[in-house]
Image (cartoon, rainbow, N blue to C red):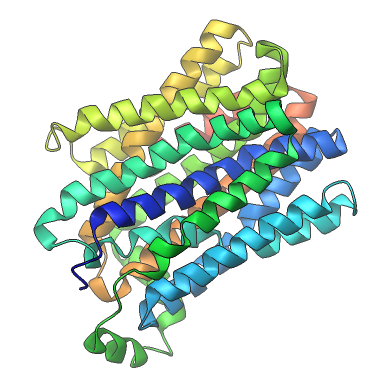
Length: 383
């Protein structure tokens, strides 16, 4: 391990990359809605960016676990992802929507690098005794990104037009490149072990998840929960338009949720042994079911309350999921398990967004109630 690489450097890079990632979703929704005038088309573009992660995650995990210089691989992947966002920006309103969706799907292959790719490297950045604290800090970077990303997307759309948010997202991802490239190199022993597993690497992450009942339950619950979260995100521009007075104000709801998530994680971090991670996953999905049900009322106060509940559920759920993965994942497969888990979640998110777009156009309350039902299914699958 390179002593000069600090947790602060890791965190700075992760925050930049993840803020750009969190900014890209609402920015693409707003840019797609502005360019096409259709919520269905906008949600299809977002779904395209996330649905292909099911393929990209496992493949990237294999490459990451086998690479002697995982930081360089991560930096190259971030560069390509930023380029894909630039291509999306150039295509909006200039080519058919189907072509834009295909570009989004190509870029989405690289999406797991921004989440699981970073987190899988954490045990090689800090000493084993510092991992629990570092894991909590790493989860909080997602909360910070969820707070800053939508807020920046909304601010960019309001001040310089919806497309500027997409450009800002790509810029933030590029700012993370130095921290990614400098990640510690893999030892010779690790590299040799990886080369002996070539023929099984591609399925190893899935098999490791399936063979661990605890990991399988947590993964299933988180993936199903992401279907509901994707549906809720696809509804936020319409919620902003119909309840708050502007489609760009829907992104404010995501910022409120991120503040609540950060606050919930901060409180739980002071008493880490209060609840087992498995219990937190179950309880958080129940809380997440209540959020879209409140939003379905279409009134400002319940809609604001739903954003708070979303954060209270999502923040602890992510921290607990990371704790379960670090606890259950074999060290030699950690990269694959984290990126495979991330890819499955992104795919679930994409499915929810794709379904909710047309459904919200027909009935916004109906789409929100459907999201609530999906979260209840997630809670049931965690037992």
